[in-house]
Image (cartoon, rainbow, N blue to C red):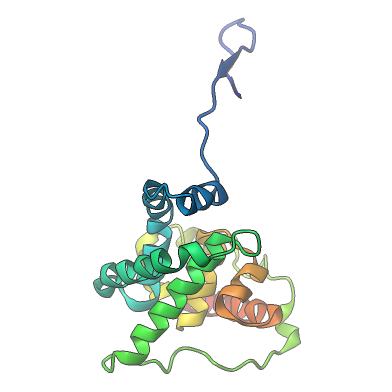
Length: 205
């Protein structure tokens, strides 16, 4: 049940109105149902994750290629879903791993797109793993409220940098989860995040 509190009126007491909360199935419930033969639940998974998958895909390869690649991603998910062990891994992490790999494979095959801006080094400067909440002053954060400017700046970053920022801030994934998706150590992800924030700061000055 969900409790909704109404604002105070003139001399009125605070009221609580009880509303039944709509029940949304978990990923595990949908996957278990699909494995039991209810194929309609796969459509629910697509509806749940297609916006996030499209967002990440468009960020990595560009919007002009994203729709076709997203279809390829969900075909791979569909083909492998019955083998996916929901007890051992997060479905969200798994689908982003498939998304990342599909995007990277596309970039490797697409000769007109440079793959060189995908960072492959694992060197970590541990001085870069310091807390960075205050890297962007208030006035620079205000500039990033402009979605057009933010999208432009993100597109100028290296693929790994913008992937980390997209997953961390838009998909609310932890650095540990991002490390699993990109198959990199935790400190590598923290370092890329730090460098990405510094790069954004340089660009908006």
